[in-house]
Amino acid sequence: MRVRFRVVVYSKEGKKLSKEDFIAFREPLYIGIRYVVEFKYLEATKWLMLAKDCQEKYLLLALLNFALGQDTQAREFLQEALKHERATDYLFVIEKPEEGIKVAIERIEASLPDFLLSL
Image 1 (cartoon, rainbow, N blue to C red):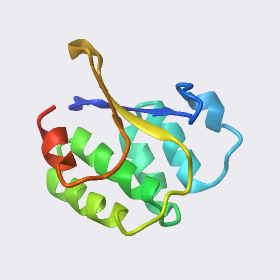
Image 2 (image 1 turned 90 degrees about the vertical axis):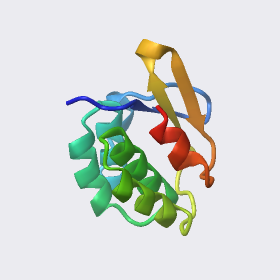
Image 3 (image 1 turned 60 degrees about the horizontal axis):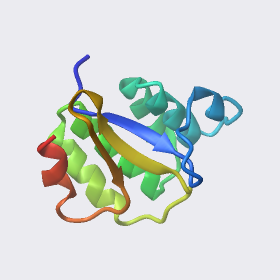
């Protein structure tokens, strides 16, 4: 499946997280994040939809939908993300290795959808 960009997850210490970092977790949010780091976006979406409401859930759903070309749905998830508090310290990074692009999503702002669509 072709995606616009990859979503990568980093710890607050700056370590790029992998599948092994999430193996012990059984909560849907962390299972969803595990699938994100494995680049299995459709499976990640299923688990994130089951997760408790938090900003990371909706931000990841938005990023995955933008990556998959589902722009309208992605915008709705971004709006929902603004209504919730963060539950983790993870940093989400957008990467396009073939173009040398690597951008951390530090906060949700109005220009984020336009930026993501330009990738």
